[in-house]
Amino acid sequence: MHDQVKAYYGKVLNSSEDLQTNACCTDAGLPDYLKATLSQIHDEVMARYYGCGLVSPQQLEGCRILDLGSGSGRDCYVLSRFVGEDGYIVGVDMTDEQLEVANRHIDFHTDKFGYARANVEFRKGYIEKLDELELEDNSFDIIVSNCVINLSPDKEAVLREAYRLLKPGGELYFSDVYADRRVSQELVDDPVLFGECLSGALYWNDFHNIAKRAGFIDPRLVEDRPITIDNPQIEARIGHIKFFSATYRLFKLPELESHCEDYGQAVIYKGTVEHCPEHFALDKHHFIERGKVFPVCGNTYRMLHDTRFKDHFEFTGNWDTHYGIFDGCGTALPFDTGTKESSGGGCC
Image 1 (cartoon, rainbow, N blue to C red):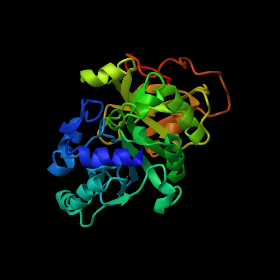
Image 2 (image 1 turned 90 degrees about the horizontal axis):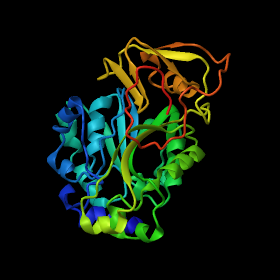
Image 3 (image 1 turned 90 degrees about the vertical axis):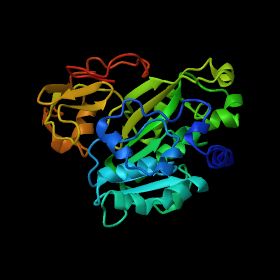
Image 4 (image 1 turned 120 degrees about the vertical axis):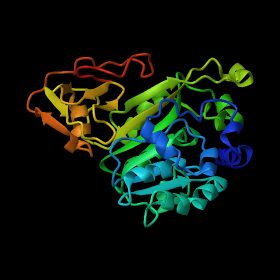
């Protein structure tokens, strides 16, 4: 499987225009500040980009970030702009051709951003075998990945390694492709369908269970959209399955509970996270307006209080009294047409 993927992304594809579906390469709805930074990325790096979004979580200044499946380095270079000279980015990829492109433009982006020294490096390796790369436990604030975990033959190992490498309170923030059911082995074995980020997609509920086994107790869906294949031949083979491009954030917080429990807690957003002056979107169901009391479950309280977001919120309540399950907590399908905006507390 590794050889098939390396051949597809290293030799078959020469640019994003060579892809046969639109499962990858979507940057719909990017905010202006991200578009401005993308305009500074080298043309060759942009041409060899095959992701399904742009993984750029909030509040990155000074962070140490690991990018799993960094490809030509596009996301690494964008993130290097936001972490600043005090931050650092490590990109990991297994494809020589992609790594050559990424390494070729380190000096270009260092100069473009006005840094005295590079804050990006790239390493060759497999994302399910990060233990082979001499990366220290608990050494990254954030781990990102962009439409790559679906290409791994051992997705659970990827999540276990990510959990090991994250600092306490750190997060895995990544975009990927998911399916509304399990994909048959016959389709998984098709190199084109797999390389196009379709047949390697996890059934969403299997992903949730794998994430929890790896230690990420409460996966949070940030955003999602349905994928249209727009290729009659491929759709004829796989059209019975619905696919979604989705971004999740998984926090390394061992104290999280398996369900959203109500302890009578609330938060007030100060409006101080960079690029988020009026509201803070933790996930699809937590759209928190500045200055407004926002009731939260215990897990959401910890995701804001025990992470890099703490200084940007006021917190009320404690853990003395338990009021049962948080109102609104349910088990509906994660990918739906509901709005992520909410005027009150919420629960995914």
